[in-house]
Every structure is written in C-alpha cells, then in structure tokens.
Image 1 (cartoon, rainbow, N blue to C red):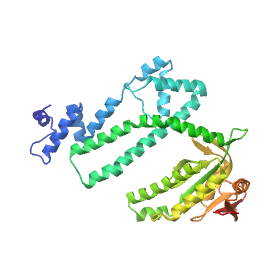
Image 2: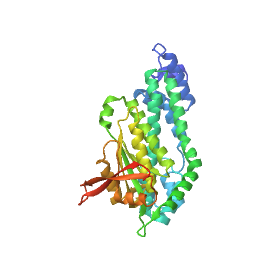
Image 3: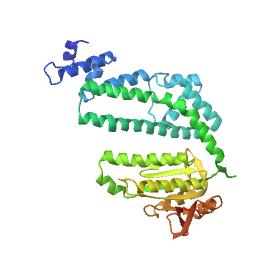
Image 4: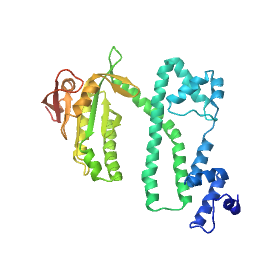
Length: 365
C-alpha cells in the first residue's frame, strides 16, 4: 500500500496533526502483514497501534483444529472442548491446538482419571491466566504509565507493545528451562512432610495479614500502594524460601504459607510481622500459625487446621503472631528458639468450643 491507498482507506490525511508519525505507523503495520480492513477496524476503535500485536499473535497461533487433533489423538471432540473449558479458554475454532499437548492430556486422563485431570487442568489454566494478567499489569504500570505521562508517537506505542508481547511469548521457554529445578525442590520438600495414613499431610500453615490496608489505600497513590504491598509480598517469598516454606497464595493483602517444619512457620510469621512493622509505609501486620494434618489438593491446603489458623489471624493485634497449642507442642519438642505465652481462649466462627491460643515471640527458652 502507498500513501494514496492510505488516504483512500481513510487512514491517513497529509494535513492532519501528527501526519508524519501516522504514516510511519501505517508503513510499519503493512510491513507486519496488516491488511487495510484490519487497520480500518482498529482505527475506528482507537486501537490502530495494537494491530502490530494482533499480527504477532496471529503468527504465533498455529496448529491443528479441534476436529483434527481429536482424530489424531483418538478422543472425542467433546473431550477436547472439556479440556479447553477446564483450561479457561474459549472454543478455538481455528488451527490453534497442539497435538502433543492434547495427547499429554489424554495420557494423564488415562492414568489419573478424566475428572482428576480436568481439575488439574483448571489449576494450570488459572495459573497461566494469572501469569499473563501479571505481565499485562507490569506493562500497564511500568510502560503504559510512562507513555501516558509523556505521550510519544503511535509508532513508539506499537513498538513498545510488540516488544512486550515478544517477551511474553518467550516466557514458556524460560519457564521450561527452570521447570526441572521446581520439580526437584518440590519433591525434596514433599519428602520432608509427614504423610498421614489417611493421605493427609502433617504440615505447618500460617497466615499473615496487613493491618490498616483500607486506610493505607486512601493515603497512598495506586502506584505507591502497589509498591508497598509488592515489598510485603517479596518479603513473604524470600522468608518462605529461607525457611524451607512455600507461599501458597495471597488473599487480598494476606499471605498464606506452609512449611514442613513448625519452627520455620514461626520464623516466617514473625519475620513478616517485623518487616511490616518497620516498613515506612505499611502500618503493621498480624498473623497466626498452626500445625497438624491437612488435605493437600490442587496446590492449596484445606481442613480444620487451615480454617482454625485463618480465623486466628483476625484475633491477633498489630505486630502479634498467634499460634495453636499443637504448634507450641511441636516447636517445644524440637527447639528452644521461641517463647510461648497464653493468649486466652477464643470463640471462633465455625468452631463449637473456645480455642486456647498462645502468642509467639523470639527467645531462648
């Protein structure tokens, strides 16, 4: 397409402000393979610079149709659709399926059962979606905000978005290279965890919740709040790693972690409370830790010990770490590094009887 074609398509006017920049963008999009119809539709929506990203994604999306992959793998098309829904994807009508991935899904279904494999697929899909959402947020906060503050040309926006998309599309290869190390570490921690005859795992679980977060949201800008909470999350990951634990998830401004060692649970919980207390913007944290049999499923943990520990978090005051009597017994049997003091009996939602609670501090006896 030449300049006259751009004018005829209504995409370019030589007399319009920023005409030179618009022409550079149009030529860039044509070089990327965009058609006049694609550019016209995007221009009407105010998204012309994003056509470059659409072209990148179109080039990266390839494979087999759902019918083709079902035939090659030897499974019903309906099973492909179920797997797709479990992964959180809409039905992909075009050639977007990988035979290897669907074959692996079918093999897992034969080994573990279809329903268990579908449930695991939901975890995988949710995790991938969260990674991509985090990447998009990173672009919006770190690049998009700068572009809004100092708007550049449409071509500059297109190139920034293309670069970010290329990085995102390269992420699976990066994860793949690291994946064996994650598997090795997970199996190592699994061997440290006591397995109950019922199949439950005996593990320490903890929750640490930021206090005053509603007030904090009113006092700080969105970027300042995100930075402060991000520093809390970073501290949680680093403390968990240092003490052989794992961050299970963040529930709003609350961190949930597990570790095979109840002493490590005390270290992580106290460390997070201390970090928040000394932070220049955060207004402190409170937490609770417990120990006992839990149900490990889909990367999360369930059961009375988890419920009890979560409820205890709301009883703690700023800077305080509470614990269950079972955790105190387990720690005192193996270490003198922490001191426990009675913190009363509390009636907690979902529990018929008051629960005896202890407070935890560092000490030598």
